[in-house]
Structure formats: structure tokens, C-alpha cells
Length: 117
Image (cartoon, rainbow, N blue to C red; front, side, top):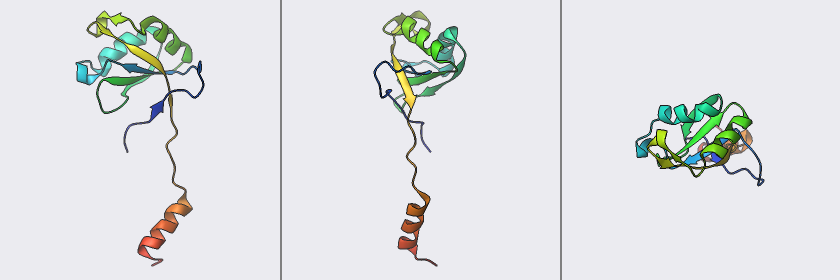
């Protein structure tokens, strides 16, 4: 099914409980647990997820927006000793809706391909 799709908020200044964090992840030797141990200091986490297949970017999801805001303010652009001294690049991120195929369109396509049976 693939990874959930995250993107930038539509409006500048829009806050989110999700953070896109670049320069950390499995490809640079950091586990989700390593990352969570740093970000959990700012509030309760829903989880840490791969942002894409590169292994160098993650989504850190908080339960509350204020926790994400505190983490972004404290860690963005900073060298993080607990994460190998990596400088983190952080922005807000929002879950993008998954495109849905309307059932009747799918049914019409199926009938056109395979007949009504």
C-alpha cells in the first residue's frame, strides 16, 4: 500500500502535530527509537515514520500540536549530540489525503475490460 503521504501545510504559518525531519533516519545510522528518544522530551509521540524511501527523512508525529511546535523551535537547524551531532532540518508536515477511485468508475472500467459476465 506504500507510505502515508505527507506534505507541506497549504497555508504559511499553519501548525501541525507532525514534523518532517531531514538529515536523520536509518540510512544515516539512526533508528526510530534513537529519534524518538530525542523528540519525546517535548511531548507524547504517536510515532516516528519514514517520510520516504531514502532513509534520510522521517515524520515525527505528536499527539499535540504544541509538542511539535516546541520540538521545532528547540531543534531546527541545531546540531543534536544525541543523534550523532547531526544538524536537523525540520518543518511542519500534514497528512495528505489518499486519492480515492470512485466505485462506479472502477466498476465501469472493470466491465469495459472484462465484460458484464
